[in-house]
Length: 334
Image (cartoon, one colour):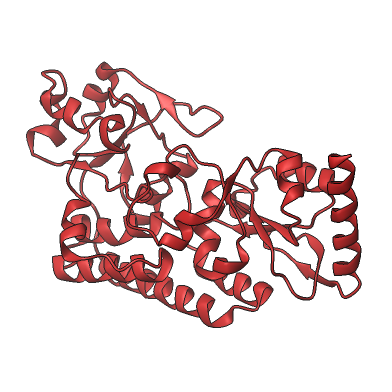
């Protein structure tokens, strides 16, 4: 009986909402009918949580479940207080009676959308696809602002992103990064992002040569050996992972890793991870912080400018006022 009530309630809400439906074209080029007024939004996954929050805010009625959620820091209390659900579970999503489901996808890379579409069709709720491409994400916020009637909030996000793009283009003009970089994941640092992986998009955008030239798995990663790393001999290493899951300390203490140029020259970096990694996980708006930070490391952006940009990002996208002390702690392995 409980399931029947949920289904009936959902059907009624959909029918009523669609009496005044409008047709939109989402960022994947799909025609979608959505309610005139959208007040209940469910993000499909963790990468969509952080993408839509600065605009959707009160319209985002739940968060998609994420492994690290209980320990998130430096993000608004409102975000933390939102109920977390398994958004792959049909019944759990139906209980929320959403107006739409939103999902971030790599539209420019022709990501397969079939699993998202199939899920939305099962519960008869409109699915709206957003573009996660790192250099098109300003347009994503403009699209969200118009869709949700939150143009002011969206404009603030888009303007900030375009300022980061503009600064990056200015820094890169006539310059070339010397050396190769390696992203180290897992405790031993031997899970990485090869060339061509969407998780390595930050390297591509910044004009940094990715040292890893091996096939990638379906999730965009590859497992390599320390012997391969020694042959590639990267000039920079970026260690991702929160706390003990980061290989940062392991690499610095290892007799094998210390023969690698990046370690010898003290260019092994702990990637900030609060509330989300600045490099790739999830591959969402958090990567914009990677552009800001890498502009400091590779293109001599002044440290004080980097700090102010990072603090502005936290205010606009995480709705959190980051202190100077908290900023400093972001770069310390703990």
